[in-house]
Image (cartoon, rainbow, N blue to C red; front, side):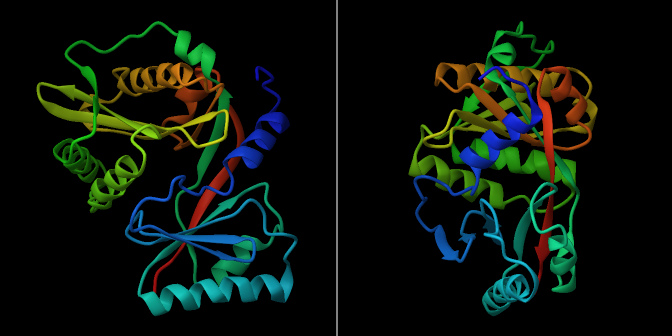
Length: 265
């Protein structure tokens, strides 16, 4: 697909990537359906709620669906993330989530674009930095330590979450670190969702002193080439305001925004 029309790209995203269910389901991960919602636990410290759409639910019926999720995760003593999208219906969903005790986190922009131009871009890795594909627990722990330094919060769930994905299907995800002098300064991974034309990019956190040196862009280009090798034609990223301008300069198109709403018992 080469059409960069926003509506076309958004429809491809909705139809192919939602709901976001791991395939195959890793050992220890639970997938439960509740009406239009899919509850996923075991990949992160808390739960995750995903859906293609809400099936037209509004008013009291929607409030009851939300209340059931609160009851389930309150009984489990777990937090849960409900990932909302700006183009979803009904328009008052986020108000109803807030009323039920969900709290919004930082908004991200969903960008989508063709793989080919990214893969064809001249690879430029900053001097003193090398990119390396990793799978070992030791390297996953180094990634988590780097992210903890960046975000000043526990990221240990990355270690066992990514490890579960690798164990379930080592061909569904590739993890890449950027190293300088033996230190992991950034890292990102690319997932290859089954039965889609997409590759999806994740991670990208970079130590403050290594930002604005082209490392993030180098990681994007590297993973785009991996996607092209797999025959994927579209790439998708949920990006922060820091990375959005970079990705848009690389040809990706903003198709919607997404805001996690988190309930914590």
